[in-house]
Amino acid sequence: MEKSKEIIPCVILAGGKGRRMGGKEKALIELLDRPLLSYILEKVSGKVAPIALNINSNIEKFEKFGYDIIQDPIKGHLGPLSGILASLCWAKEIKKDWVMTLPCDTPFLPKNLVKSLVKAKDENPDAELIIAKSRGFNHPVIALWKADLNNKLLTALKEGIRKIDIFTAQLNKAYVDFDSLDDSDFDPFTNLNSPHDLIIAQQILGKLPPLFGLAGWSGSGKTTLLTKLIQNFTKIGINVGTLKHAHHKFDIDKPGKDSYNLRKSGARPMIISSKERFALIQENDEHEERSLFEMLEMFSKKPLRKCDIIIVEGYKNENIPKLEIHRSEIRKPLLFEDDKNIFAIASDKLIETRLPLFDLNNINSITDYLIQKFKIS
Image (cartoon, rainbow, N blue to C red; front, side):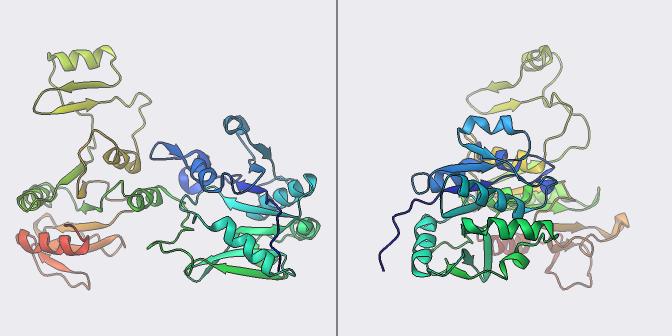
């Protein structure tokens, strides 16, 4: 069969509210100092044309990218189907038979995505929809849609259909399974829905090492254990980065010192350097504490030395892997029953649990376990 010479247009869907990202424009959230949208554009640039952005608010923020901006034809944030309808209508306006849709939060799209979907379209002339598939899951937002579906989709939305799987069930579909086409050890269609996903993304990109937190009540011995773990890791050549949360106002330079006076005068940021060490001091001028993700992102930037593992003290309510520290004498309840992120416990007494349990004072066994669990070398 002769291959189609049609150049497929593409719409990047960025019209959602990003609730789990704190209501921020997800497409503009930065991953390693670049907006997520730029990763998607990079993967399809030169392979599709033209490109449009499906945006429903703060349109002025997206105009700088220089692409057509299309809005949902039905107002009210009706979900991805509404953005797909906008894509189909736009394709009809520019007289295109097919349109590709992509979400704005999948920065690891495979390089052969466009080529593979178009090939499947050519090999399935009766198909109305070509869907990407991976790890046993279908991804109908990552797909080629026949533009003639616009009226059928409009009717479905007016009838109250919101779930994409319900609408696509009635269509003639073909699938492209990228498990056989992509050799990544992670799902290339991984989407980023939360700050925790942004941490995972940095680890996939090789910019952040494995990390875990120490969770425990005040007085349980977190800092003591952390100090001993750092000493053990350092002895065997493992570089440890640490991030400690403070619950109160603090100063790291002394009143009267030049660095203190410069910072108090308004220097933002203030950096002090010597041949032995340097320090960066930055005020939170908005009096709004930076998130755990924002702090961890600093470990991926120069001139910080690349470390082999990051240990976080505090942030016990954050969604990261945690080692619970428990000391019986402080008479506080265990945390692991209510926190699924806890993967092991270090305690000064026996505890009934299916999780790995370690003697709080046996630092060597804890160190060995962490090296194996996080594959530190």
